[in-house]
Length: 273
Image 1: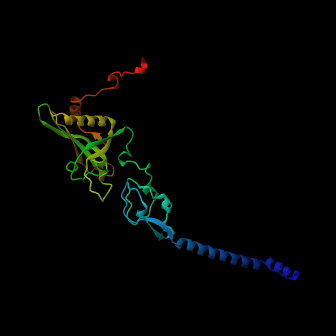
Image 2: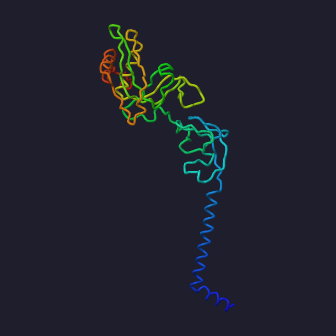
Image 3: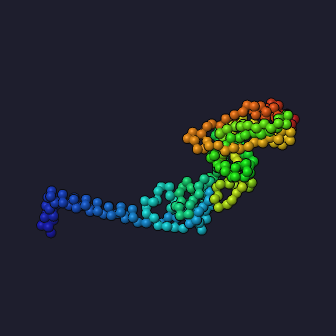
């Protein structure tokens, strides 16, 4: 036994022996490591996918989901692999999930996270304005969110003559909705008729437009705001929103009035007695 131990010790002390053993171990590690990596990269992963087209703002149910085995390389950090994070959630307001698509983080949200796209990107100092429209005034339902429009103003002056001109230009359309408040273009499987378009304008322009809409109820003036599509949405740098007619602005202001906070009557407060 001692002789065997001595021979083994002497064998291991041989530099050539140690080198050979080291090389063998490295080759074995590389071999098994490579095969492990290959197996990991080629072993299919079971993931959920949409078995039907899911329109924006749609609650996702189990019957909309099937499973498929894919290569791990197709699964990214944003791919949802656990169906528990999908069922009961909603497709995002700006996302249609095509049939056959995997589910991704930015496409699936909770009901609380689901915003109204019309009010998502309104900057400070701007106010959302809605304008009543129909199929005719939207040029056969051809005004889409993201398009730019100019607003024309038409009215009768004190002599009964028609005045018409461009009032504000380069307004970006935020949403087009039907009479039920549903987005007209978010669902490709339903035919919806436009009832209002929503856009945002600076606060001073908002007040001017609101006055213009009130003039629509004055028979002697018979005012009307008319949306006209432009090509600004195709420009690399669309023009900024701006008032284009001081004449029309003055006409609207002269036929309406404004009241400041200081002009408001005092409100009776019984707690002051």
